[in-house]
Amino acid sequence: MVKIVQNSLKNMIRLFEDKSHIEAYAKHRPTWPKEVAETAINYLKSKRSSSMRTNLCTHLVDVGCGSGQSTPLYAKHCKKITGLDPSEEQIRVASKANKFENIEYKVGNGEDIPLRDNSVELICCAQSVHWLDWDAYFKECKRVLVSHGCMATYGYSTARISTSRKSDECNEAFQTFYKKCLFHPRRKHIDNYLSEFYDALPCKEKVREDSMKIIRDWSLQELQGYISTWSGYRKLAETEQQTDAFTELISFLKRIIGEDGKITVSWDIFMILSSRPVL
Ligand SMILES: C[S@@+](CC[C@H](N)C(=O)[O-])C[C@H]1O[C@@H](n2cnc3c(N)ncnc32)[C@H](O)[C@@H]1O
Image (cartoon, rainbow, N blue to C red; front, side, top):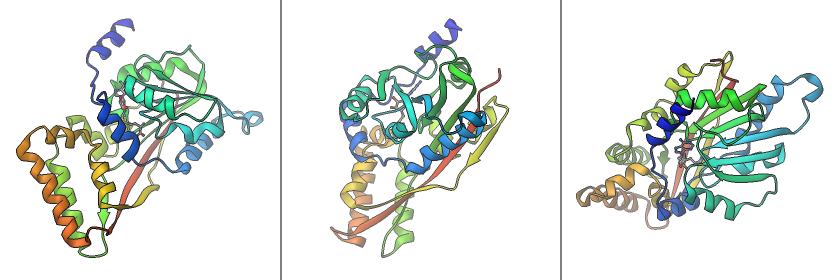
């Protein structure tokens, strides 16, 4: 057990450490709709005995909480919440913005959750599970979850954009740019809506809920801010020649929608709800 955790820490991918990246992340990433939290909480309640159905969730852990994009949505549904992220900078930003007494943000990772055995009712993991060592994570989930405890693992797809003029062309240019970005190979798990993760989950029950979306009407500047949070774009921007692709995309969109035009940006949400792992 100890050996696995040490190995997973050694091999951990550290992409969200840089201060300017974290600040951009907190400012420009979309937050999740409240329905995501309601779906996870309702799933947990359906697993409880009938006398406990209406109680607050006793302890929820948000693994890979970032700067708190998902965590606050659960505040009114839970007695206690721990937001966990290995990036000290993410945790600093999350703690500074925290408005809830029942939420505590801590530095830590999903393969070595700093909590007691059988002490957690719900483990959430939002847009983060593709970074984890899954086998070590499943063992930790089994260890900290109570017997009726559940996991809610979710993410959002690569965005699609639409515009009032030449919408298909704009979206095509956006997708072409996305493909030029130098994402880590594990990004494939987001592109395949966590299908390999779903197959790997060692749980008696697992269900998908893929009907929700995030939709935002953004200015070109807001879209630029969002792209600046992509780890694949940051890698691309390290090579001078390739930042041209970004300039080209923005100039192209500006020509079509004008300086003040709006862009509708939408992401599919994919969610996997599952029981405590059996290993
Ligand atoms: C794309 S961000 C997601 C943040 C947030 N949950 C959201 O919904 O936007 C991925 C986060 O996973 C964290 N992460 C990376 N490896 C991790 C690990 N082994 N355990 C827990 N979190 C990890 C990163 O530090 C980063 O903050």
